[in-house]
Image (cartoon, rainbow, N blue to C red; front, top):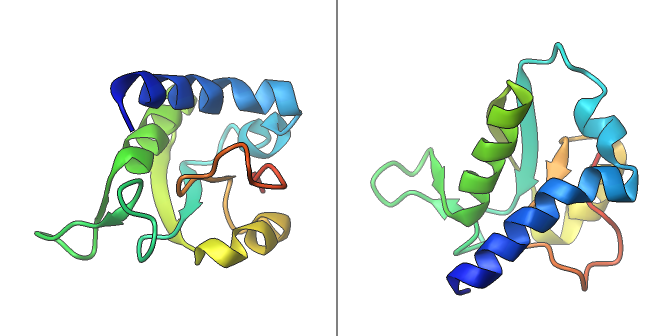
Length: 113
């Protein structure tokens, strides 16, 4: 992914909630201190993967995007490990506020819990 694609993806992520009427899940609890985002650290590289120096932490593009969104919401980002194949079901259960893990426009549903 080049810099232009990364910027485009970031803008899409920021504009997606109001456009797709999914902002209710992300913004419904303004007093919540955590911004839970779902992804797959085992198969989601380079978007999200275990940090080689600190395997209990994740690194990657989605980690940075989640941190920026959380900062804008005044919340702390918290990664929720979800296998890629079950992101849809986890979103429907409300296991996280937003699904990342390299989701693109080919995904059937918007992954926001």
